[in-house]
Image (cartoon, rainbow, N blue to C red; front, side):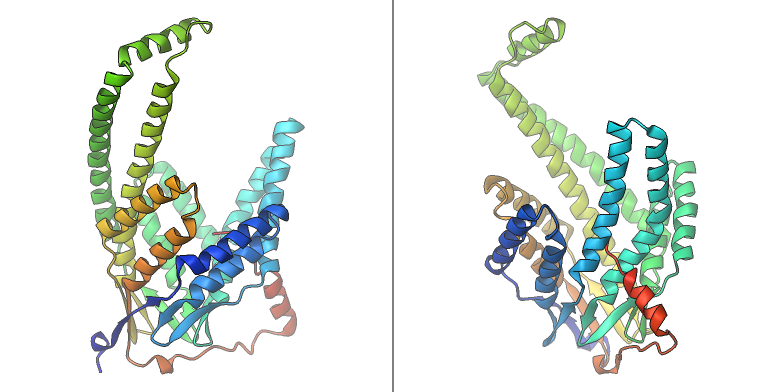
Length: 368
């Protein structure tokens, strides 16, 4: 049987009602423990979503230790708290600058450890994923591409994005089998250019639609009176303020369309770049191929409708929104494997007990 003939879609069996029970408990316990439970909440959430994602009759699993996630969050929070204390309260900007500098020095290592953590504690059919990039490879990437982004004023972003995907994927393994990514920067630039053109078109449409809505509103809340009152307040704080209804409507419309604009751009870029990345990723020299068939319009519609439903339910629709996104993305993801039973786990007998304990100690997650 060829790889193409064996193509199967992933299936997500979760439901919004099931996840709502986990979600609401996570929120309550996180609040009453002042955020400490957030690490356990993340493990419960990931176990639910991983455990309900199936390929064939088998599901993925997540095995992370919440205490190690908590350590990662404490590290990041400690840096932030020390920076705020010295910068805003003690007004010692020198020490605050040193703290910020140390954090940025450690950041590539923290990101690498976070990637390693997420993969190490993810499994499918008892076979775990793993990550093998070195800390130096991360430092080299962030130094070189950080400088490149500065000197090119951001134009090199698609090249850096593609390079980062290679750094992530080409050092990832599923058991003894390695993933490889063959995408090129030119294709990513093409997607970025189309996304930028779409962004400009969306901006024009949003501005035009906003002008139409403001024109309609001005018939009921005269725009001339609003502008006059706004000018008077600017000159004289004691002057009569603009009508509150018009201010509220204006702010709501601006924020609403701004978020819609972000969603449209996010949906298009995410669909196109996700499809491209997975279409150019293989496992074990092609024994397993991947195919993503996300629709930009489909993803944009889900994001926009989710946003509106979350807004009108004051956030209570959030669990259903997450499940809805997961179901759509999963059903549009296909895997073609000649024989999945060929994939075996790894056992590194070269690592001594001390080395293993040291590696486990530095298994942290900074919340990527």
